[in-house]
Image (cartoon, rainbow, N blue to C red; front, side, top):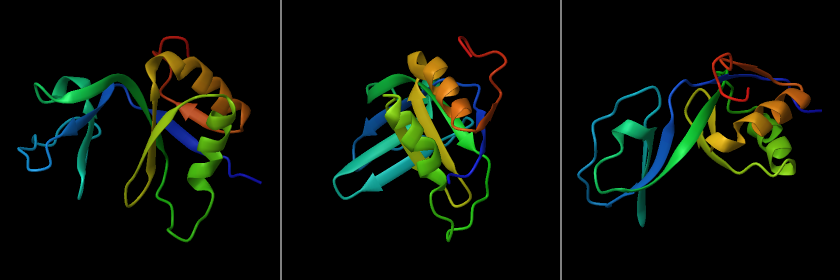
Length: 133
């Protein structure tokens, strides 16, 4: 059985951007900022207004924060959110931090996301002002 989780909808709109591997890199800011550098790519997740000028970016994401922290030994935490969304045809972009996970979905899929998560037994907070929530 999947765990019942609490999530919060972050109030900002987000973007996923691709940056040059050698930088320069923007200064961190906003409610969620993740810079991931691998040998062959550099990805940035940040509030839409913080995307560096000229960066290749996909805007129009919203972010859900899973209420952690979660012990590393726990299994199925992220899957309990992702599997129902997969089954509902909702595309995601997931990020993990030391304490928790974030799931980004396209803004236009937010109503389906909220319905799906609630039907899966999760609680989603911060949706009072979300369109279609």
